[in-house]
Image 1 (spheres, one colour):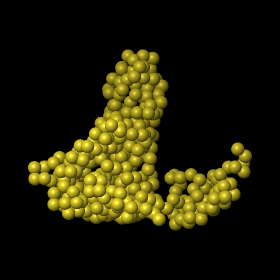
Image 2 (cartoon, one colour; image 1 turned 90 degrees about the horizontal axis):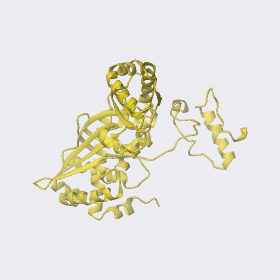
Image 3 (cartoon, one colour; image 1 turned 30 degrees about the vertical axis):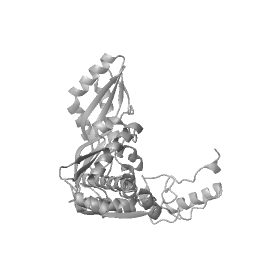
Image 4 (cartoon, helix red, strand yellow; image 1 turned 60 degrees about the vertical axis):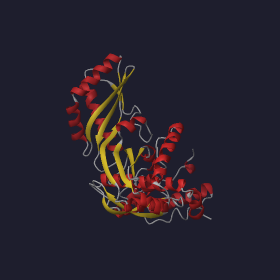
Length: 390
């Protein structure tokens, strides 16, 4: 690579309009592409330091407003309007319909039932017996390791260390609470300090690799369906028969039967979410609010559960076992993203569980609306009417 091929950078002042303009001129010279729209931004490039490298501008994704959504959660209570960033027509309208149905049925009950973010080092030994005995040593010294974490990194707190022996290796999962941050970076730092302490104090001075890949960072895993990654959150409500007839144009019984049929399809296809389309709502909210969009790969997994009640109403729920979201840190402080979080009163400290509850309820609303549209034979017609950019 010659110097003329290198993307312009300034070690001392790279996050600036001047350098963004230089890179825009560079890419036009190299490819002929003009960045007139990309380079039309209101954000201050200086605030993106730590979020992006080689800044050239912004991707302006349309943001729509869905709602209101009535919440009756542990942390999220009252009516909420939901910012959703998407280029898929009909999506915001569909979610709004589901939110109206939930609201007219008394709102979504929600609860975050577990917190756990992982980093997963693997320790290497000469035999399986050594690996087993090391696992016992970790249990005996767990309080000391917790102390190392607390003294080294401000936010994360070590809950437990899971252990899985394969051959002469012991795969571990260091599980943490991370406050209102998503926590991947801080748990990586905390685990590094912990592993260095372990190596210094264990008689075998074991070699380790900071990630043995069972933390499944930004990858779905069945382990997280059981053990949790990020937040395990449940959203539920009872669909009233008369509301279903009026707003969804279906009987609740059909939704119940459809969920059984769709469950078989989920099993046959190997999909990791048993409902209609959790990724749609999660991705749209993640993009609007400055979450790490790659975490959709983990966060969209989950289970739906329906129960047909004796009076004809339908208990409906969504459980998301690996929802990774934050109201502090990462991209949440950028201007656009912060404003979208503020719409829901979900920016800053003490708001992450509230945000997680809202996300789960939004997923429930989206599933309800899409499933009903399929059953009422309105799926294609609604997309034809609203979802084609002609």
